[in-house]
Image (tube, rainbow over all chains, first blue to last red; front, side, top):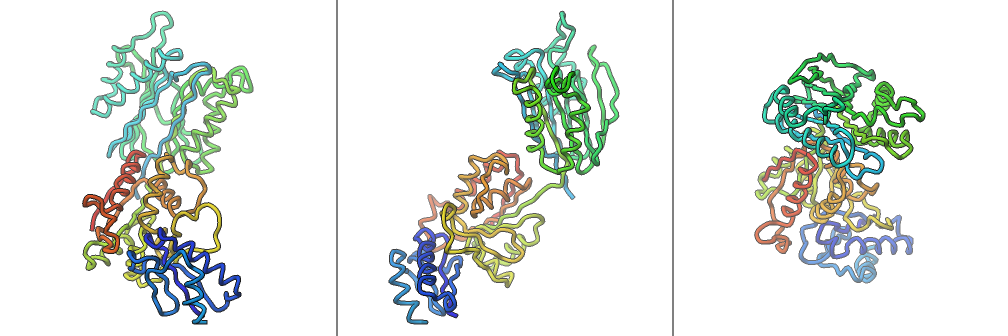
Length: 81
Length: 386
């Protein structure tokens, strides 16, 4: 089970992390990945000034561009499956 | 266990009048709660002024330690008896409650206090006395937990006279109504609203006289403790969290980083109660968190800011909409408590330097406004910084 964690702390939230997560969730449903990907939220991963923080498995991504959630998902999540 | 006397009141204006001829004055100090209900003779502006003067004078004098004799003498000199009608210009009921335990009651020409104890209407022992040519009734009694006390003005006694109750609602029937209501264990705000509604209905929406009800309830004091912000010195993290966990009453944490710190100290997992597929209103705030042993976990700055907004429009818990977002839950916790203690960590997130405005962190700015609003609503608020 691959765990994808999206930060919903103050800074990330303001930069659109919740919408980003909502898109991930939609992709997971559309691509039938619910049994292989677990999407959760977390508070503050201490990388506030750089952009949204997302953890995929063991790898932490800082400064994720929240305007391109599909791109991130395809590039970083799909190859792990 | 500490007790508090919760209080609420509501007045109905005589139909056609703009000003109510009844007045309620409540003074709350550390040791005493002083309640004065005054009913001015007649109605309209004159009655309003008489009642206001009476209540103001009585409350201020008692607060400064004057005896009831001195109060009555002063009132007698200020408000003489009407020569024609031989009636007092303004009646009053004065209730002084010391530390939510001992009550002193003085009544002058007004309906007697309704005391509901253990589901029964109880009459506290009163004796008559003459002061400055006026007959007053006085009594002293001890309060018990869960006592409901209701003071009403004459308008309630005669509500709907000539209608369903020929002689008006009547003291006895009002007593029964409060007695039945007390079994539901609602709060005083709901009690006065219920009494008001009934009074209005009996009067067919046109009250024949100013009608006021003051409800009091002796209940346990409710506390809430809020931890927000990690301590400036990380060596005090455990101290901050332990203070929160050792506190009685509701425990809340405001702040993602703060919540994580708490989770670390308590060695418990912090989860986010969040479904990404959630739609509709209420998506404007970060979700709440879940941490075993803590009643409410929210994000920090955005939630605090939103809580301040919600508090602007809400006097009591009942004024809040039924929303379940983080700020609504936080405000519900705060308004539901009598005593609130804030443990404020002064750490500044190095990644969010823009958060500091002229040397003061944004969190503190919102907190200050939040605390001010809570104090305006008679909450006892204490703050400590770490």
